[in-house]
Image 1 (cartoon, helix red, strand yellow):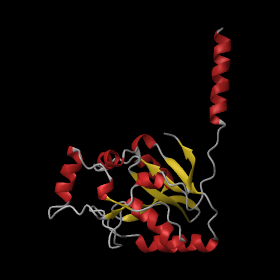
Image 2 (image 1 turned 90 degrees about the vertical axis):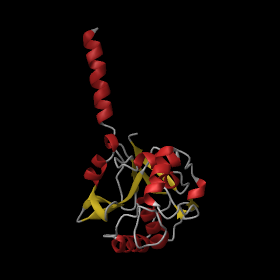
Image 3 (image 1 turned 90 degrees about the horizontal axis):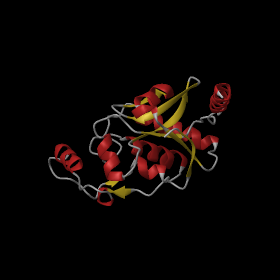
Image 4 (image 1 turned 45 degrees about the vertical axis):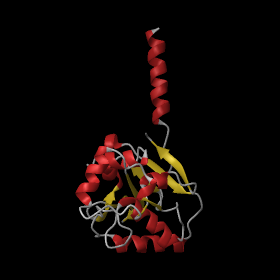
Amino acid sequence: MKKITLLLLIILLVGCNSISKPETKEGDIIFQTSKTNQSKVIQLITNSIYSHVGIIRKVNGMLCVLEAVQPVKVTPLNKWINNGVNSKYTIMRYNNNLSQTQKKNMVDIGKKYIGLNYDLQFKWDDSKMYCSELVWKIFNNGAGVKLCEVKTFNDFNLDNEMTKNLIKKRYPNGFPKNTKVVTPSQLSESNLLTTIYTNY
C-alpha cells in the first residue's frame, strides 16, 4: 500500500512539474498584490486582489517589467515577481497581434516615462505617473488601444476608514472626486485582454 501511495505521489509531482508556463512576450501585462502601505486601500476601493501592474519589456534580451514606482523604472521580471505578496502574479495578453510599429511606439512612449516620480495623488497629467496609468497610456498613446474606460474617484467605494485617512493625508487642500483614474482592477477586467498565466 505504501509503495502504491509513493508511486502515485511521484506521478503527481512529475505531472505538476511538467506543466510549463506560456512564453511571456513584450507587451504582456502583469499584475500582483503589492506590499506597499497603500496596497490594502487600493484593494478595498476596487474590490480586487490586484494593487499593482506593469508591462513586460525585453532589455538586452532579458525579460523585465516597466513599472511606475518611485520612480518609473524597469525591473527584472524575477525581482518584480518576488516584490509581490507571496510571489503571486497574473499575466494577461492583448487579444489581437500588435504590429511592429505599435510595439516600437509603445517602447518609445515607455522610455519617455522612465524616471518620472510616482504620482501619490493619482492625477491624470504626465508630470508624474502611477502604475495602471502608465500601462493604460502606453497602450493608448503607443498602440492606439483603449484597454478600458477611464473612471473617476466617484465610481469607487471610498467609505472606509483606511481610505478616508489616506485621502486626508494626501489631499490636504480637498479631494478632487472628479479626477480621471484607471486602476489595476479595471485593466484586469478588460475584454481586450486574456489571462495566459496566474498562480493566484
